[in-house]
Amino acid sequence: MVYNRTAPAPWRRRTQSGSASQRGTQDGSDRTVAKRTAKSRSPERVALPLWVPFIAGACLGALSVAWMLTGWLAAVPRSKPNPALDAARAAPDAWNWTDQPAAAFPVPPYARFLQDVRVMLDPGHVGQRDRGGNWKRGPTGLREAVVNLRVAQYLREFLLAAGADVRMTRDEDRSLDLPDREDLRARAELANDWPADLLLSIHHNGVDNPKPNYTSLFYHSSDGHSRASACAAQWMLSGLNDALRLEDNLECAVLDDRVLFDRGLAVLRNARVPAVLSESSFHSNPDEEVRLRDPVYNRREAYGLFLGIARWAQAGLPRVRVVTPKDKRVRSGGRVTIALDDGLSARGGWGAERHKIDADSILVRVNDAITTYEMNWSKRQLTLTLPRRLSSGTCAIWVDFTNVFGQPVLHPRLELTLQR
Ligand SMILES: [Zn+2]
Picture 1 (tube, rainbow, N blue to C red):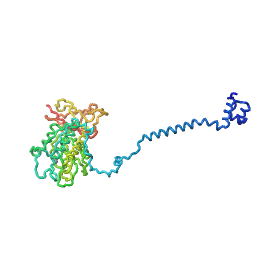
Picture 2: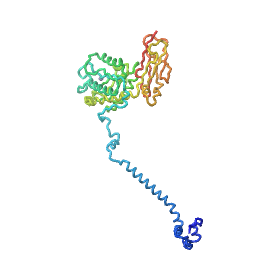
Picture 3: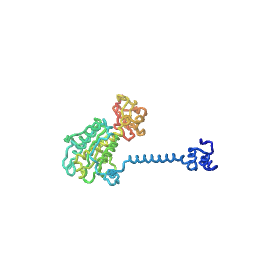
């Protein structure tokens, strides 16, 4: 007999007329019907097969997640003893700042911005007449000139490796026997005549007191001197701090040279290019004198100055140039157009199309008188009209501004020839 699909559901039949198997048996039904009807004796046993796939699926899912977690955990490196990390986690006061880092002096990638930058190195007192006695000597007789020359020579190596154009006012310890005033002027003139983008006069400090030992950097700020000098000094202080790790620091380590003498330092006063005088440490301090005898320490100092100069160059070296008149010959009342180079945009790269000049910092002077100008930002040029009453000879136009790093123009003074 074929199972009757239209017949009432088995459980209904059971409630209506007793067991289906009983009925099947009574009706003489075959074994198939008997089996089907046997499964339908209770409603729970019929519903069970519908949940089995769900339960089985859930179990399989849980197994899969467990399997994945096991794999992930196996992939995560187990924490192993890491002595370097443990040491690095020490409290900040566990280290001593004056512990000098390893004597390794790599050229940083940003030093590429020194390419073709002109640096004049001036080893202090080299070639100067030795006055004998304790003059420019440490407690045990170490001559400052010897240390200055070694540092300058090492610094030249670093700068040349970075592509800078380097010259030295003196590169051998041989007396030129010049009077001091002439000697110092000659050093500055070498930088002016080139003209250098930076003159660095390298010295070490000396006082009667054996205790002081700190870094100081000097610039000259009277009229006609580039503000770029103080800026370069700041970067060099940063490099020297990293390299030398001196314990003492001045309240202000970048100083106008007129704190020393009313007229400042001759080598800086006579310079017409950005000029800095470094006193990296005190050769009059007995402990420092011992260190200064060590060429590795001299190289460390040169590296600090190098890092500072490289960072200074990375921040852009702004320049100005006369666009018209091309022959730089002007008449009173004439027009002059000057291009402003922020020292950064011409490198190209991301954002090169936007100028990096602080617009409020632009200052134009003609023969020391502040002058108005028209700015063409798309060309990054300014145009000014010269006064109608200018005596013939040279007309000096001073154009200064700072870029986004606060770097002033290296050579802000432009000279034009006045015609009648
Ligand atoms: Zn000196």
